[in-house]
Image (cartoon, rainbow, N blue to C red; front, side, top):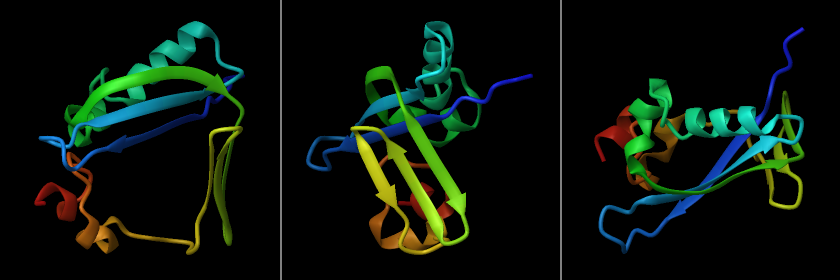
Length: 119
């Protein structure tokens, strides 16, 4: 039986810094081995190519760390939240938000949707 691993990437950018480079932290569920954690860190940051590479890898200037954490992700109707124990606790106020709704808050370096890609 294959065990699924959960991965969360969080980061920040300073829009006053030229190019607004991203600095990110990656959390991989604590059940992953060191080898799995390393590989999943390179995948989610786009260092292994694929969709993340096309969408935002070029915006990431620094991966601060890839470390284990207890992760809980819930996508049930009316109960969307993300918990990285001791680090992140985020809850959705609405059940769906399209990236286009973020048009006025374009994310520097993001290429995930038309509103960000043309920003």
